Image (cartoon, rainbow, N blue to C red; front, side, top):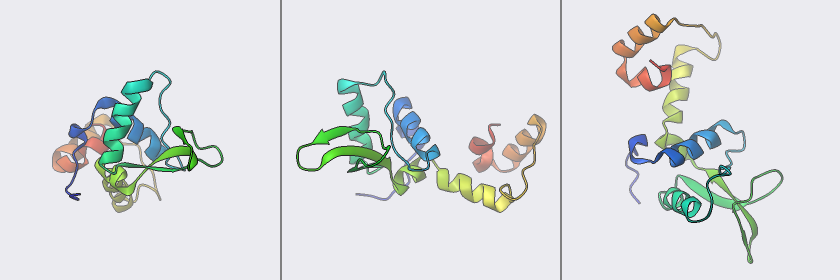
Length: 129
């Protein structure tokens, strides 16, 4: 499988929501929305599994159960490094570290955010500008 850079634009909204929610969880687990069931859930998850953006792991503790397997028992889903890269989490963390944001948070005005986004277009998605 190619390690080319995946674009978030190539993912559907439900896939982006799942990956983003998993990235925010400490355990990286995928929890399906209650309205995502049956064939729709299979379609969303199978694409993410096929592209190695998520992986199946044994469900332990409080991990949400994706499915049950006779051989492995309860199975959960977890975001992979490739999944984090697809939604550009690593770039976001690098930006925060470079800016020193973890050490000293500063609130920027909307005008300042727009100026930063114009100067550094690659930062715009992370700035909300």
